[in-house]
Image 1 (tube, helix red, strand yellow):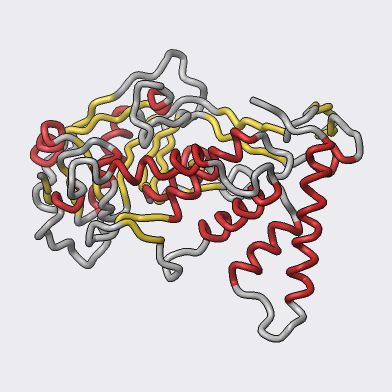
Image 2 (cartoon, helix red, strand yellow):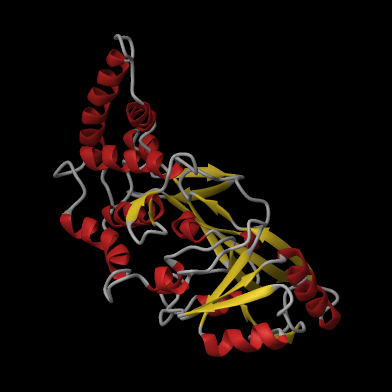
Length: 342
């Protein structure tokens, strides 16, 4: 991965300084700043990506693009409504300003193509499968959770409550789908160092330890022991069947009952383990250094569009042997769940 020299940072900051001055001047004029201009000024005041390698910036652009867009019930791609969240439009404008400071002044065509590719995939067979799958299905107005997958596995789950819990380390597999693959036993953060590099420094001292960064930001991995997890989505999301190559989904109409059964069944076998359940917290590795308390219940914000709900089980001490997928039976779910299939 190519690094960024202090001279490159200095050149970029010159343009950033001019644009920041422009918005500060405009803020004093009639009409003041529009919302996107305030977001731009926010980034220009602290351009946290200015010293990041091109590859990392490109990956971030793709992650943000995926979360700023959604597949609507009408089968169209559209922006996530501001009434739901403006978080990703904020950081998307940050990306526009960062690319404005780099060579070319905008995101390269190959980066834009990579960002669009997952969205284009929804339509490669015509109407997205998620639209077809849920056509005519009336979801309850009360809270639900949804499990997407292959019907051959979801039928036994509905009829008998047969579940497969994967150990977290299993997801770190290059052969898995992009939407599924993730390093679930570590969380990585980046600390910008452009100010230090401009001062000629190549290291910082944390808790008495020297941390070298040379021509890059500081990369801090948080690594923890393997554990078990069972993932669902907090609602019907029309893009999920494509992302997970699913032909069916189980809509669980009593999430509390389901989670209680899953947790009690697991603890009857492993009473010393610690259960966690709830919505996953999505963190920005460049900005959210203290957003979550339980790493097993947090994920990189690149996956935020999935709106995952999970049940996790963590050992109180490091397992004496490697964990392997676990099969549980929690009893029939037909009283409180529906199966929807193509």
